[in-house]
Length: 172
Image 1: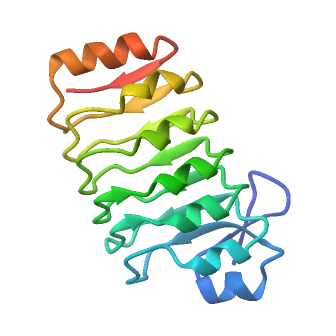
Image 2: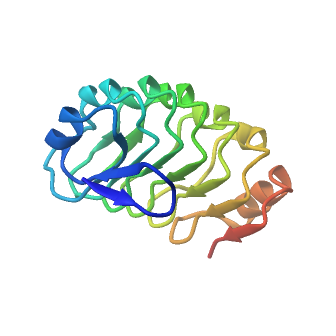
């Protein structure tokens, strides 16, 4: 457990066992050495969990447990083997930052467009050729990374028109 000085009483855990032993303190998880292929269901037992950074190289899905952590504000699951994001992600209504770069995604569920608080989305280095048709519903999105994906120029223009509030749009 490590106290993060940027905010008072904000604790970051890099060990799941320790986080489960102190659920009242666990606000951020920064997991770098775990071989799980999905996020553990037990994460929902952490009532104050606001952020997850799970960069292990083993995750294969953004599991349904994310929908059971309503207070979650950011989810960084980059550099894994994620090939799908389950529709339950729509229940993470406070999610502001979602980083899925460098995974194995080919598409996103339409439900990702129900994350109305989302202001940062990184989808770079995947195999996505098209974003959901309802992408325009992400009106709070300010930053979008889609570099190193097989996205056509027409799709980039469609995204640009659908998201006029973007401040930072990174693409090839």
